[in-house]
Length: 304
Image (cartoon, rainbow, N blue to C red; front, side):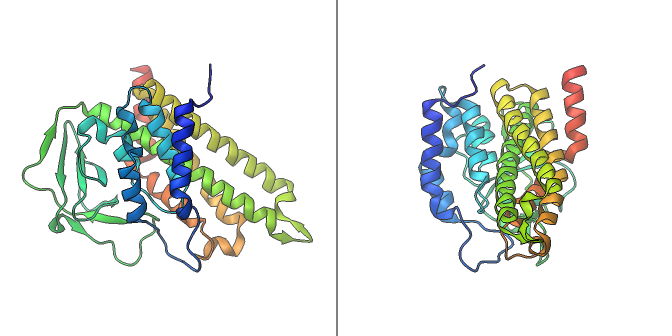
């Protein structure tokens, strides 16, 4: 099994790194709870980075790689739905794209604002363009590092897409796992940098064995999330996708507490950018019904 990236994939990721370099660090003295950039979003769209899934030689695996790499930025980018779900529906759907499951309203939705494309997944798949009457703010106490709003209603008529809802959910799970893998990698790197530089008792925190063991465990969980996401993107198997999403949500629950603990008092402030990754992970842990629903979906796919 060859796990190395193709030349095309390497070039795409290098191009993303170059394009996103101005957004790779937090602006000086910025203590925002969430960061986003319309300029970065526009450049990604114009460069075609979110359209790679439609290219036969690239496909879903490359799309997942793009999502994972962009998730490492401190700036939240709507990439998962656009790169891995939108091509199934209509490549020309206006961005950003928000994914919701039909059911009770009032749930916070990532990237939702007037003008976004909202994809509603139920027994079928429908979409509409959000208007001001469909969107409500979350107030000042927003505990997720995404731009988010509340969906408070659906229009009477929506566009129906001729695509299987199960296929859309599978791609949604792959997108979730790929994004979580990037967030975990960036949060871990940020934490490692801090504990390597911060000294207590006359030595760097990173030299203490207990911290090193827990950081090593976090690295194993992060690596697993990355490879499970890519495997699911490669096989397009519903069971693989459910397992990837399950591992991503479980890993996020397990490591975010540790990361903030390792930073001590800085982990409870906005002065350190760790929250820009961990508090996006917190939002992802609730998507698609959370860990319980992913476990049920994985069991059904593998044993039904």
